[in-house]
Image (cartoon, rainbow, N blue to C red):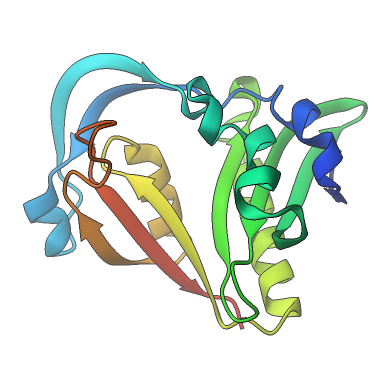
Length: 177
């Protein structure tokens, strides 16, 4: 049985032990996405690992965003950490899901959905109407996942990470209350 608990930011080093890396084999076609269609274009396969950039790792978040603006949710099966989610509250009426990860051998089993629902419940508990989620066009599985949970695509920014990558930034939104 999996339990999801809130943890303090002092546990982020342990949180990071759950890998977030995945293999990219395609990316979403932006013209198709703009009209609500999920069309994948093949790319040369590569491994995408958000933790490969030190400034993007969960352990960097308290210094960068403020520890008091973060909520860490962690999923445990018995004594094993199997997933987690991090929420960022930039102001009293905004909420962003900035990290969601599941152990590779536990993916596609409903744990991501449970973590997302726990994150939505936290946002709703605070009376914040919507939750925003940022993904990239190369994270096709995440885009399909958030869409399947009812999130709507609200922003597409081609080349959304200048000087870092040529990926498009995709922002999703879902009602929490």
